[in-house]
Length: 61
View 1 (cartoon, helix red, strand yellow):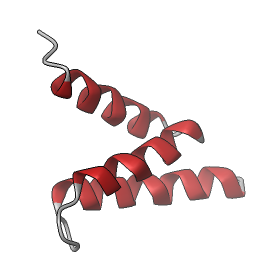
View 2 (cartoon, rainbow, N blue to C red):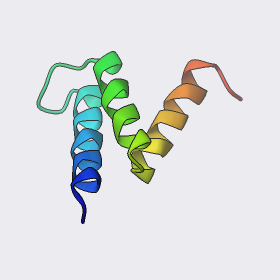
View 3 (tube, rainbow, N blue to C red):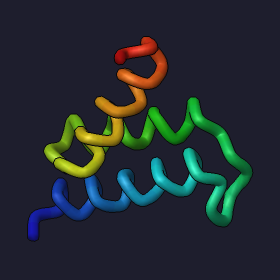
């Protein structure tokens, strides 16, 4: 596993922690920032989470 892949997983975990308030104060803006960093580095789970957040925020039905 390359360094970039390791970082993307860590950023994804931080995104989850901030979005859910797991172990840190809940902060959606920070969570999406970390999810986006992970997604841009190729983390598929974070790409999915950013997409879901975007769809929920825009009222997609």
